[in-house]
Picture 1 (cartoon, helix red, strand yellow):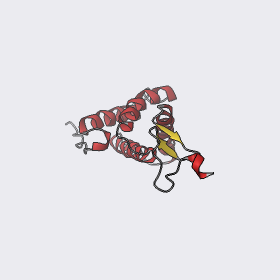
Picture 2 (picture 1 turned 135 degrees about the horizontal axis):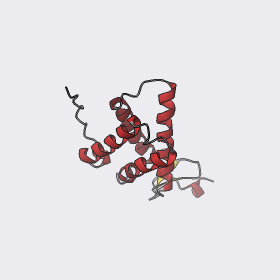
Picture 3 (picture 1 turned 90 degrees about the vertical axis):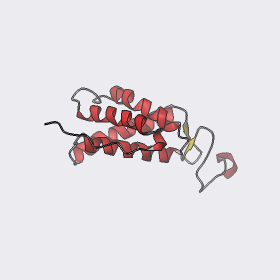
Picture 4 (picture 1 turned 45 degrees about the vertical axis):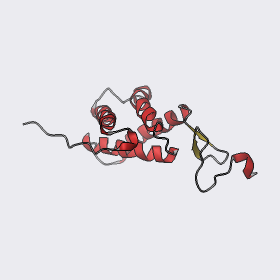
Length: 135
């Protein structure tokens, strides 16, 4: 008897349900495989295409991170990753690599107050001034 996999909810912020399903599938494989996703370099290979697609949405870095966490949590549920400190540690490693890749891509940078902004210079609504104008 085969198990059916629940349908993937569409998330237009990643570019449509097909793209989201592809990223979700790669994360599930990484989380269930004893070999894939166990090193930082293998996690980078999995996460880099996700970063590329998420940054295309033009969202602020914190929204991009939120989108990735949602995707990762869904993958963990599908992979039946048990709850606990060990699994939290594993998921945190994926989140760390996502953040590193996001900033490495050049699409997100930090302003003078260490807040993320997109490469086109947009800042948070709380402080829209450029860092040099705040001195």
